[in-house]
Length: 345
Ligand SMILES: *Cc1c(COP(=O)(O)O)cnc(C)c1O
Image 1: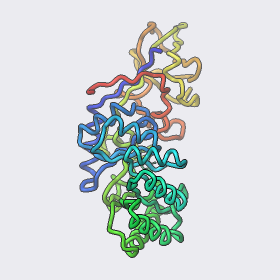
Image 2: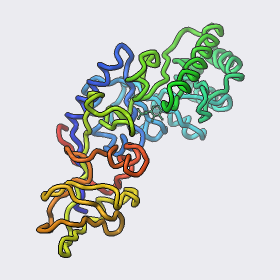
Image 3: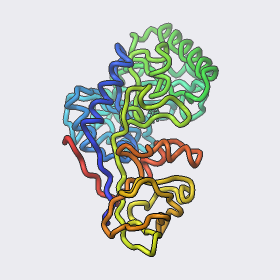
Image 4: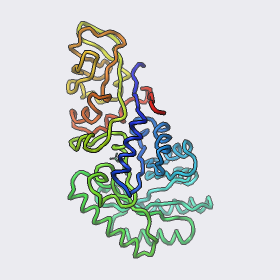
């Protein structure tokens, strides 16, 4: 394997600072699902903690527990996918904050907390239209009053309410926000002390101040991944933090094959749609797969390095746009076998 993903942690830290400035006074939860969007969990969360980030969004419990192992006590780790009793137990053991959007799961968490003589910190999720887990608005008042009972029993600690929005159209997001506001009023009517509210991810957090509430959950922009079809990195004040580098392994005239590992996992439909940066300039990537081939490059030598993305050439989002997807999709599909090499660790 000669391919490498270079990750610039100083650039990451700059992005984190830019994000914090943009969304202040809301706090930032750094989302680290999918191995920190392919950049490698441990170096990313360590650097973020050094920059003063105190909230981490882990998606699954196993990732949350890893973040706890890496950073120890003193940070808050939010996980919103726990299904089995074993996961709920592990979440409480790792002192995670749990996002709960299901009445049965709420009961399971209460039972698990009681068994461990713990108080589980939970954030209740209202479904504001995405229909991706979350309590339906018609069930919400009953759900929050049950949660309040369980808090009074001493097994839950209600931290706040949250939801997730599509960030695809302002109109749908506005509808979602109206549902979120209603859910907040019902939370207050249930006599629960106000908690943290969090609704938006990267795009809406930047573009729409009214979506920020107390806390924003940010992944993409901290990693310098701009939205496909959206504002540029310069407009957002962020920079890509990684560069995927492949090496030349064989040459046939002006047709050059790259280290297969470099592209393992990347969508094969990128072949024929994008260019890569070679020492001789931009060259067309004609195929991606078992053999990844660049054409029209005379004078290449084995070991020459090619930037597939990043490092001033096309970004992950540029590649994504060529095939109608999003930059995150490119970033998370870099093979886990490709070593991550860090600057600024
Ligand atoms: C992935 C995710 C985020 C972060 O989204 P970005 O667009 O990468 O900032 C926030 N909240 C939830 C629930 C997510 O799944």
